[in-house]
Image (cartoon, rainbow, N blue to C red; front, side, top):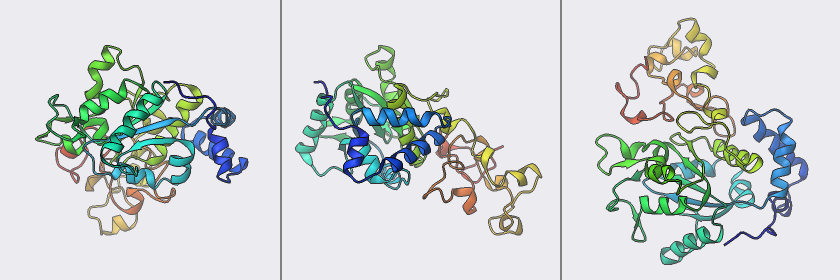
Length: 325
């Protein structure tokens, strides 16, 4: 079933909520900046969001801790209200929906059929790859089956969080459920072109919330994802290491390293590499987009990067506090 084109645009909906056009343009400019686009891209983003209907979003949670949803709920630019309820039409979400039981399952199936070929599918949590579906079932259907069914009708697929991206913590050794990421669950369908939607990985435990927003806005504006790296991560957010933009980088260049979390070097802001910081080998936007209203990130707060946006971060040799190299 096709989506009616008379649905309100993003801007129309925001205006109904009392948002001024100036605020809207400021948000478009901010989104362009975090996508590493030139200022000239702001009018294109504004035009796309002013003219296109709000996209339908179907959010499937499989083996997850709800941390990714919690992270998105605490996004600052934009706020929860504008992200979930104003810009996107969130038609199914395990955590946020009011419906339960059969009504919830029916709502999901109806949303898939109503917006077939036009909705954004967001997956969080590792996916047990056993076809029998003995782990993580919802309404009698395995997580793998739910993701594969929804992926066939999606316009865009975003794997949110390290679990949905690489398997994450559910896939940690010995991986008793055989968990993997969204691409692992969809690989054969993608190869057979049964799934045509681009699949974008947004890893992190949890992911930086504005990264997901930026990916969707880029897709709405330009009709395609931002450039992706070999792990299907958006390059504007994962093109540089955490180390590259760390405020402790000058101390690294001078060979000045903290030896414990409470020594004199730590108090002076020395590099935390010797305490296990994985910043030099981790690609993420923590040090640029930051967290908590762009206030801080682990290294700024005195703790090293855990490398949560990289594959197998949970099983790294030496653990969290072993030297990265």
